[in-house]
Length: 211
Image (cartoon, rainbow, N blue to C red; front, side, top):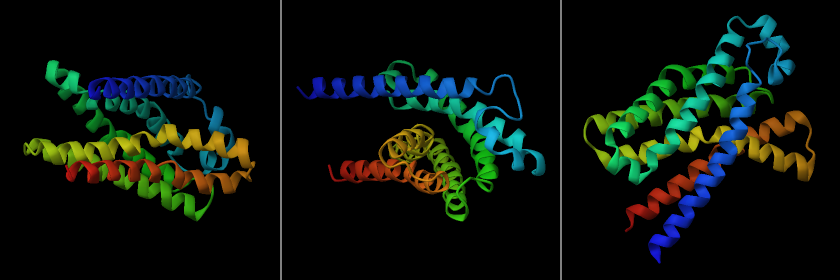
């Protein structure tokens, strides 16, 4: 019975992830070919015209995030880990390298110019710093053969990676239910996009530690 429940939960997670991953892929494809006024950039023309390298860092973040989301998802599959450990390691290396050298630094840069004012900026900057830190710690722990700590920090890292999905999910829900002003919406989803994810992981890790 327990195995059936675990399989059902895994299946539900896979279906949900696949659905949102396809949506994220469609959003990414909006930025191909590279333009200065594509999609979200239409409301960021001040930054585009006045902030050096804003567009460069924006596209680095957009293009790299989809690879991080994809590779990160498979890192927590026990079947993959046991049967294909080399693939697990290679996907893990891709995940870590892209976050540390592309996604997190570019996210930090564009976070300084986030919509919604001071509170939104603080949220996205904090998110980028924690994302880098959790990922680096997870990598260092596995280098030192500390598997439990490695898994814990990579779960934290992926919780923040998945904020790319949950942020947009909350945006749709809040707009549909409450119709908030655009700047108010950005301030809310800036925090709502990642804090619940991290709290869920912390609860899970706490529960696991008590077993």
